Structure formats: structure tokens, C-alpha cells
Length: 105
Image (cartoon, rainbow, N blue to C red; front, side, top):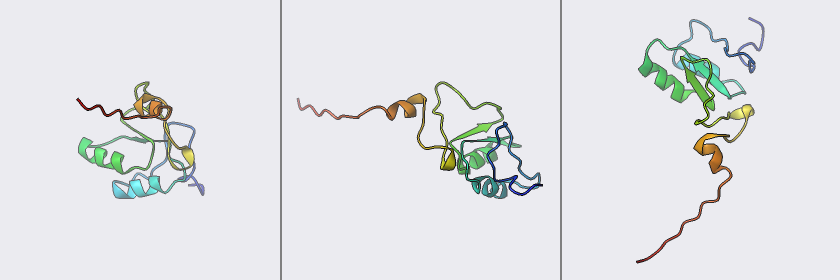
């Protein structure tokens, strides 16, 4: 394919991964990109997919779904796709200051 095809952030919902790539090879190719907002995985088996999803260096991973947005889930990426999270508990934490109050009886 064209040079850089496997390294750019795609504005669609699919990123090209060679059909022969699987497991560690596919993860290495995906993790080599500079972007890290969202990855999508269409598995053959769920246990293997969970390992792949954990190893992917992306802020969000969609498994068998075309949209990963969810009001209860944090939204955000890693690498050149952002830092931090918006939404969900993790997003609210960014705006809070935690204080511990210790009270003796």
C-alpha cells in the first residue's frame, strides 16, 4: 500500500491491519503508530481478544462494536491523541481535590 498507510490516524472507524497479522504482530503494528485514541478489534475468540485489547496502547478499545463512546465511560487517548480523560468517574476526578478527614472516637 501507500507509504505511511499503517502509521496515520484515520478519521473513519477502521484502520488497516494486514490480514496475515495476528496477535503480537498485529499489536506491534498498531502500537507503533503515533496516535492512540481508539482501536477496534473483531475477534475470533474472546479470551484472545481480551489479551489483545489489554496490550493495545490506545485510550479506548472497541471489541465487536463500531462506536466506543458511552456517557458512563471516560473518553480520551494516549500518545499524540491526547492526555487525560473526559467523562465518567476518571474525567470528573480531574476537577476534584481529594481530602482525607481522620476522626478519632
